[in-house]
Image 1: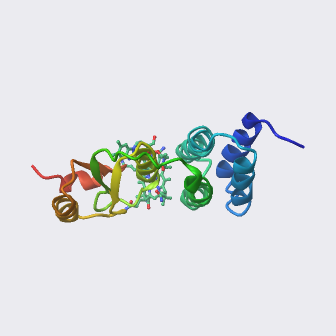
Image 2 (image 1 turned 90 degrees about the horizontal axis):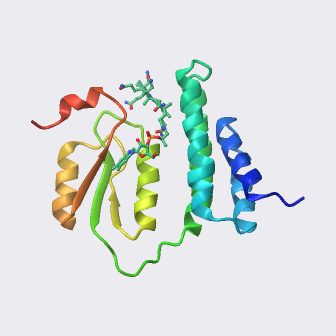
Length: 163
Ligand code: B12
């Protein structure tokens, strides 16, 4: 039975929330095969699912291991959808060095922002997570970056912020 885009977005959302890290790859492939807009699969299916998982953790319904499995499901879905995003804009815009600051391993939001920036034609250098300040500076000098984009969800790494 053919599913509407809305049903498929709901299925992607549910797969993240329900920790279906095995099934989500096939679901994402079906979404592509049906020809639905890829970016919407990410922004209206997968990401809201992760946000919901975060809310469930804050409400005490999910614990950290469960949220971690949700983030694995999100990653698997992203890995399928991402190569299908049109990112061949010829004129490259600014160079951006991006990473999660030292002491913080929350990289889901940073990964999403990187994808959005790449889709928009920016040249992005991703340093990953738990990145010391010096590495941001070194890389920015090396590639002559226009922007350094730093991500953190934790309050503790603030102590490492330069004065
Ligand atoms: C998922 C999650 C995890 C996962 C992370 C998996 C991963 N690979 O990232 C796991 C389970 C591993 C985890 C671990 C921990 N977590 Co946690 N985690 C979360 C949770 C539930 C959701 C975060 C998330 O991914 N949201 C979904 C994404 C899409 O949203 P986002 O990150 O906000 O990103 C958006 C924007 O912020 C923005 N953005 C993000 N980065 C950037 C960068 C740029 C340049 C721009 C422009 C925009 C931008 O755009 C994104 C898209 O909209 C939050 C609670 C919450 N509701 O936020 C807690 C939370 C962040 N975690 C918290 C804590 C305490 C921890 C642990 C210390 C727990 C522990 N006791 O071990 C460890 C951290 C260890 C460490 N050193 O980092 C706290 C932080 C509290 C604080 N003030 O410091 C939170 C707030 C939960 C809480 N209320 O206590 N966590």
